[in-house]
Length: 78
Image (cartoon, rainbow, N blue to C red; front, top):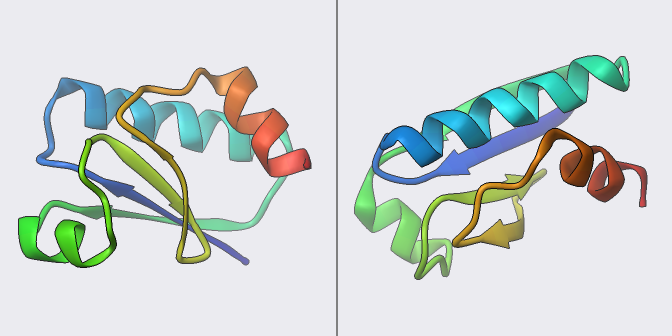
């Protein structure tokens, strides 16, 4: 199972990134869990300075922008 984390305040961009991540995972037929991390201390501890950020299995893959569904699919296929 893949664990995704969307790190951010819960703003519109964060929600969009979460929706895109779910859409990409479903399109690829992946078994996944999506966690939304909104605690600023946890976000800073993860080394994220710009939100929204996307972590896959604990590794930050993107920060400061909203990836498209296709960009996330490409990232997961790599």
